[in-house]
Image 1 (cartoon, helix red, strand yellow):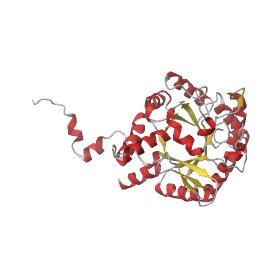
Image 2 (image 1 turned 60 degrees about the vertical axis):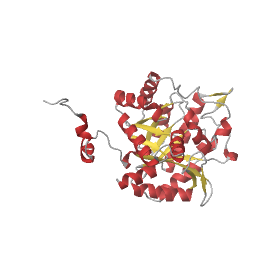
Image 3 (image 1 turned 90 degrees about the vertical axis):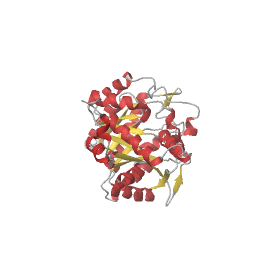
Image 4 (image 1 turned 180 degrees about the horizontal axis):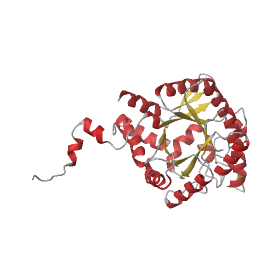
Length: 329
């Protein structure tokens, strides 16, 4: 008998054998596209720190949503760029039924696309200090913030949002939002809980995109977002959100926290999402521009890694590009 008897390379020899024994597949059904919406008409503003990403006025958003639907994406996620004059210490504009997000939801729904709409539930786009909640004596007031988040979730649901996604990391907000939605007869609206959201340095380009970086200044969100050093704590956070009624859970950021995605999926077996955040996207784009990486191959490989780790869906700013590449395959 020849040595070695077991040759692992046999299953890797041909493209067809690699496809046959492949353990994971990345498909367009796995992708959610985060989109920035701004005021105006026929307005498109590029985000300098995120090449290929732009803030879109509602009319252009509807066009982009139509393309996403035609490519087969299941959903988009809306993030508003709020006029500084509409920002306030308590973020009241977040609860207005006619705010930018609600008008964008209604416009996309009126287009009658086969596309779900996910909306961020947090106050940082609407506060003049850039934090995700109401401040009291310089600190984010957990319970006062939850009261506003419940109103925000309800106006989004009334506008037609399919999934509300609290990303604020206040304690107890998932249960309170679920109760508020049910009381308003929005029991069919799902909750995607940003259950393990870390106080990460990878969010910088996103804060630039929504105009919150300058408001936040040198301050951080470490008092309510998770410490990057902690993994066991993430499982406690996730368990609490599930117990409070979350339909899906999110780990954010993505690639630096794939161990948390894997542990969450193994422990809870819940629909588990991960977010390829702005810093991850920007790094890949910058490396590709410098000639250090092949953008298309690296993009698809990075997204496949999310699937291997256990993610059921991935939020990525490159969703449209990835969908086109997958279509070619």
